[in-house]
Length: 306
Image (cartoon, rainbow, N blue to C red):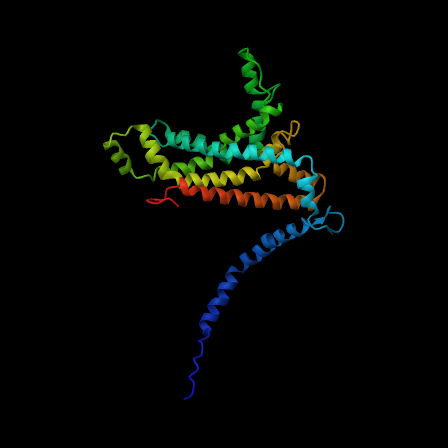
């Protein structure tokens, strides 16, 4: 009995035409991804294994850049401490401040739309303008805040001139500029079912009980989202610290991105800068994974924690 061979149906002419048209439509994105994302990533990894100063051809040195960063760079430990200090405080404090401000703006108060616009305003100001304004506010000699303190007979505060105050000042400015997170939280708070608050009222819950047992659990997914964004932004933050302090005083605000920038564009050590960039990438991925793993215990997804 002859074996019956089943032929796999091939693509019809119409299917091939549709596939070709689809590839043509997405080809600009594919080309852009290959040229502006994939190729730079591959190049930066290759350069991290070389000695490269932009003026001469890169020389392959293997893991020498990574070894130097971890074992022979005297500033790397200080930079790591500054960055972890900044991120560890700015990310959670920024999210907490944004959540509290959004909760206040979600209440029935007079002029609520005006207050919402005022709180969002820092998010749309360019970083350069923000730096200039805060330089004027916190400067020791002519700053508005210290001028007010002097007028009241109080001692001045060297916000960005003292190593002990410089990092807390940057964190304070970060907390001030939480307009985007406030808007996201505000939209989330308005989606919390009113029926839950009504049920809590029937059970005799006061305002604090409603906030702690209804508002916070129902917004934990968005809290996680803003916390992840704040974490990534904190590790990559460069513009405002550079414009305000340029890493000073005494390297007190020499954050990781500033350290990377110096190696790349001041010392022209592109190989080492590329290695620093890849270390930063791995650190961000690890911290993000840990944050998502820990969310199993406190993030609420409508009936089950995930």
